[in-house]
Length: 312
Ligand code: UDP
Image 1 (tube, rainbow, N blue to C red):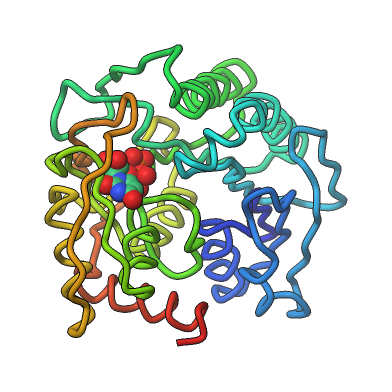
Image 2 (image 1 turned 180 degrees about the vertical axis):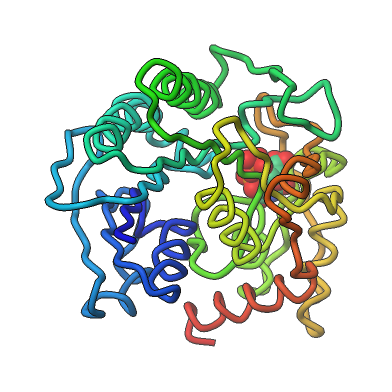
């Protein structure tokens, strides 16, 4: 296949490029490098079948030849990134998705939209199933991301329903692993950076809010299965193993035996979801997918990556 990955120099996008290249496909990586990094794809540049185009998908993209699959993964995704780039986030979710869908239509490609558990907002239903419509504040600080992704889902379904484009939607829950940016502001890089610099760990609020963390290789496996399927409706991909952020901080602190700093509490950001856990019955049933990497092993791999980033 010839595959386009928008956001291909980002955390998840670069793992997708690598996985499709490893499986023997050609890959065109498109990224404007706002939050993506060339270092994420340095090992792929120069490999036969791989190409990189620095391009903002908010502008139309023209590509020669056959395109079998478009994975639309460009968007700032960490709260501090999208709060720093709210308009770019809204534009890539709307104009960027429109352009990527237009390309899929012209090339007759399978199209996969990277959506998010944020479409559920601060959920009233727990765990979150795909048929839950969500509880999103449309004018809160997180709305630039949540509503951009909800619009992206809506336009994707409209292209499917009215133009018969072969679309699919993956709702991605918290994901971690190598190639996250140490300073992206998300909880895992923040805490690991603090552990490696021997600083106290920052937990927001009382730490009782929960998340469920999926290792990136498990996520990529789920996305590849969805891309190979004929499913058009959203599918949750995430690891249902849920824990509080306070428990998570303690687990990360325990990875380094000589780490003795404590935890300091900081104010909870506005509209921070209280609970989040995917119901993955649908992915299990239609994709035969199941996460495999146990958290402690995934955390070790990620900590080793950050150590090498810091030259430790
Ligand atoms: N968080 C924290 N300390 C930090 C960064 C984040 O306690 O240094 C909390 C944040 O308030 C949220 C959770 O960790 O409750 C996950 O935050 P993240 O930014 O990783 O992503 P989210 O799941 O909110 O999109």
